[in-house]
Image 1: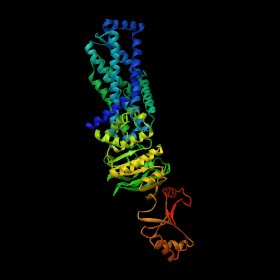
Image 2: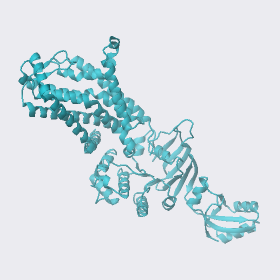
Image 3: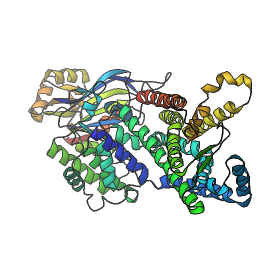
Length: 284
Length: 308
């Protein structure tokens, strides 16, 4: 087990030693700043004031650092989440195969399964760190703008009603949702990772994953009753499970059910990828 | 004793295309250096891939030090170090970090062994520089270091001197021979450079279109034997005489026991009725051997006559 963690540690070291890893962090930060300006612009703030007064009262109380950070994170993730997770997971194996690094690893006494577990876990840890970075920086921006303290207001069309939290509870809900984000992206990691195990260019694995997610989202959003029986089979509708952590009362059974589905889809992607990679010939 | 056994291996990548390897068998003795030769597409890389467990054969068995690569891959591969043509490292990391990462997949190695290996390949001054700044020769040294780190018993080398300058090739050759002498390594070397193979290898295996066409000594003659190019006015009688005197037919003529004095041999042939018109000790070059067995040679293969 010690050796496994040593190998995982080196894999993470390798990932974080790359300069382009930080390009991703930089892009997320830039988009966060963009959304910060959008949400603190005069018109947006006026709109928020009207909305908050109507649903919660006390604009100064509820347009807090946490509320602002939530808005920044939600929109940043909507824009970049799938793309970046696909990029990381589609790249981690396919790029090494394409470049030739993998040959020097595959001639070591390590099973392909173990190697893939290390790579997959690295993706998941990397994703969690990236999302935490987004969460912390968004909150930092919020605190600079609105100061420490106040309440937290959460509303999206998927929520049954507006959720209102005190600062302390809002803080753990906020970071709980961020961690939840890295879990709900497990199917995206699974699909991209699986495609990266095929004889496929890394860019192709990323593009196909993004295309699948976009198509899934579009189809699941079609408001036709004919689609209702099939709605539970769409991945992206289950990926909204992170919002359950922001319900006034968290529906834990529903959350765990959705989490189990997402975990199952992610692990299925991993297993299919492993079966393909196990049979694959890697010529020197 | 055989260190590496490649038995009846067949591999076909695509239906409708000829097999990359067709029932190929050969063995590499412990402590020997064996060259794997063949034109592009002959099946050399596939053979190395099968040995390293990276390519799954359709049939056959491969074992390293008695461990089956197909059923006990990790145990078999633990004994192996490998270098590929144009080795690829993580460019943004130092040579040291690359070695640490790669050796972690072999179970990890001590700092002392790492330093000792780096010093042995002569990279100690630059090992903490980024690999992106390394010359091709330095990368090749780093490749040798990573191959030696699991303390292998077998080295698999795929075009290891490709792209090296002449000095680099000479240096690498010296290192290879030193390794065999110091560590008793068994080496399988795939190379296009026949001169290099001729200078370091004890035996060669020649592949052509996925089929083994030759396995044996580098110069095509067994130890303790001498080859002679013999021409006569009555070839049939001469052939019979050669066989009677213990000769073995080889491509360029006949090989006889080295204990047999050339003048005695000539006298014996004449006594048996052979009308000899040309008699010379013949040393087949690897190039001649290769061209003959790979089907590229003219009828007059370019051997080297070493005495008349």
